[in-house]
Image (tube, rainbow, N blue to C red; front, side):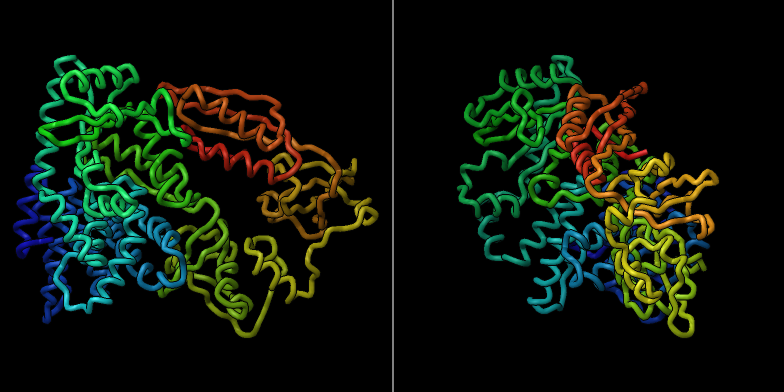
Length: 624
């Protein structure tokens, strides 16, 4: 909580401490613009809010662009300025970040009752693609929780509960542990003030005092490792009140908690892990029953680390020792806290989020630079996209959906009246593929209509069904064996298209060739989109033909002894057959592997992909 009013000069002074090249003119210009945009009747509380947010952002060690965006984001959120205006004065990057922040808050406000908290978290991250926008959003939430407010108690608790279930998971998924505990404790204090005071009394130490203890412990351990010529990074954190509350709520007594103070030591090799353990055990009294070797005996989710508890000045300290590879696997892979314990596994984040987190960790520990932070972008939505109405209501659609799908998702009449569409303010064709955070506006025609060619590009089942119904077309049905004689995939006249390699279970369409042959393509294959209708024939798969199909899978992953066995296990698990495999590695030990697999049904491939993507070493896995 801010104990005094924050002035712009405070923000600038703090920025200079973190970065001697802090751009005074840019930050001053941003603050003055935001202040002027409030008009004659300035809202001093709002001005104090943006200064508080900017100060938090500065203390996170961010760059000039992020700080300026923090000062400006509220102008878009409150409708005091447009993105174009900010872009003209401050450039595209600051305008984008400011708008992403504003959109995220508008989405949370307008949609929190319509979707689960988990999905709202994902949507916010899909909208705020630049990690710096996420920092500003979280800083704003934290300040909102801690500022003095005239809100009724029930309203404050409502906001605290929403923030706890929507924004705390975002912190966890991005590895922003300090912001996580700050938000959790702030929410905890509002939601359960009696328990908060009780734990504070039991601890008998402020967070600041415990942080100072951690600093002293690190200063003791660091020279011990240097003396043995062991290169390692050491981090520390005291356990926060909400975490203590959860442990005690599960039946633990305060004196049983050995991790009120925690140290993490990260090194380059397994050999160093055990050398560091030896140094620690040689210099401190240990608590034997609290030692765990998760390197020799990993947890079921492949979590690896050495855990030991030592006594320091009559207080227990938990020390975790791991390599950087283990750390990234634990934090970003299947072993990560959010993937296996507190939150449901989620394909929206997949390995892309993990890779962003790994980059951030590397920058924090190795580079200690802010210049490359802007390159940490997040792209989500591997099987769904989150589109927005002009009023920022979220419409969840299948990936590669179009404005026609969007219109039908809102209402059937809107779909039938759809004549044109705007995406992000620009006219687009109706077969435009919507991307995450696109704002879609449907331009209506007169009367109700449905065009047959819409069926060539719509993705949602609702849109397909409504269009077919309007056109008087029967829904695709499984044909009898007799009816399939002329056009079945088992016929000698039919070949499977190599460009899209359709699989049983996927929708297909036939392309007639000059040699009276038919080539079966996936219905969304780009090679049949512009083919004259007279050359296309309706097709379906013959049931129980027993025919197998060969497809290719590409996997990009970090080199690991468990990589190939894991992939082979996934193929075997799905009852598919491996035909051939090849792989190449670059200087960074990144493997690109190709697998030729024989399967009978599309669902077999889905199983393979699902298992492979759960492997912590894997960055990408896709059919080619």
